Amino acid sequence: MLLSFSVVFWHCNAIVSAIMPAPSEDAKLGAQVAAEIESQPSKYPILPERGNEEVYRYVRGITSKILNSGTVTHKNEFPWSVKIINDNKTLNAFCTPGGYIYVYTGLIKYLDSEDQLAGVMGHEIAHADNRHSMQQLVKSYGVQALLGVGTAIATRGKGGQTAETLSQITNAVIGLRFSREHETDADNSSVKYLCATEYNAAGAAGFFEKIGNSGAPLEFLSTHPNPGNRVQNIKQKAQEANCRGNSRNQSQYQRIKGLLR
Image 1 (cartoon, rainbow, N blue to C red):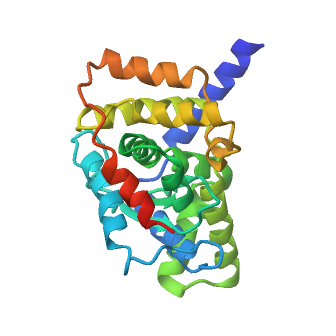
Image 2 (image 1 turned 45 degrees about the vertical axis):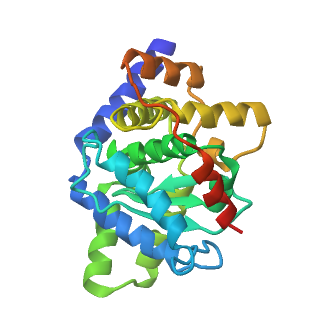
């Protein structure tokens, strides 16, 4: 029975992979989802860049180091941007297809170090770079529906049906529950990315250890299920890859946290 389920699961994934649109469509859809998110400031209050330049420079600097590591497949195909959502109660981060990254102030303040944040950012970058979110959306909506939203907006603007579909897709992106297979893939990719930087490649392990020790009900875990032995597997991957990055001076991270109100 288990074997039959595995075969069916593999077969479904193979079909989805075969009908995936070109990566350029990820960027187009991501731009539309990002615009939809930022058109709802009451629901997604974006931290203003004015007055928070240092915080943005710091978080984007971490992202740039990962993207410039030479290990991100779609580094030049996706636009890659970072916005911070000003919500101290939400401990989450997500990335749209095409690389539009959103991280909540609550998560930044919850973490203990730059390595942990780099690990989380690497994990989110991996979901876009490995096209996990696009695969999930193709399963749910089909290729034509996703491409149709982009075409309708580009040619006629957002009509009623198109706007409703885009809203549904946006909510789906933010609430996507990734498979354990995708989670393992993202964990491994995060190690690969960080291994090529100055960061501790097992940075994400520190984040997941903190979650496990606190028992806090994090939004992150509701959409990023534990594939099993997560912390151990991340550390093992970093060791096997002979990663040499060390934990950085954390005083700057604590100062950045202090700038967030």
